[in-house]
Length: 157
Image (cartoon, rainbow, N blue to C red; front, side):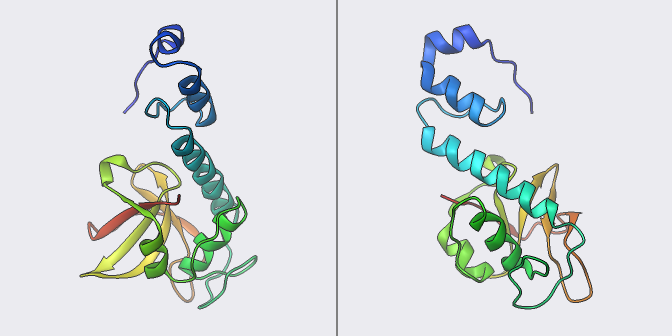
């Protein structure tokens, strides 16, 4: 989904704050006057890059980095590096985020895998239906397609 935006008309209609928002998120259009949202999106994009930089790091249950991770340890580590504190477990992280629909998801949002009402896994949305995550014992941090529809999305505030 790509939209062309004419910057001068954008300035006229929405003001400078929107253009700054536009610049902060690398060309994505965010609702006018939503500087806090733009900061959250920019921070999440940085966290995504930090998670991606850990590609190949081994999974270890309970590990929070910097060399080994479990799923929520990776998300916690990535967001801590951009100044946002997340709780320790995937369920607690879900409870702490602003819940969003699949159509609202952006790169850097968290993807929560659930069974019924229980969250059992978390990754960072990378776009195109993929996540960066630390999946299980014997595996490493990697980019992978989302394999189920039983997911919820959350944005770190």
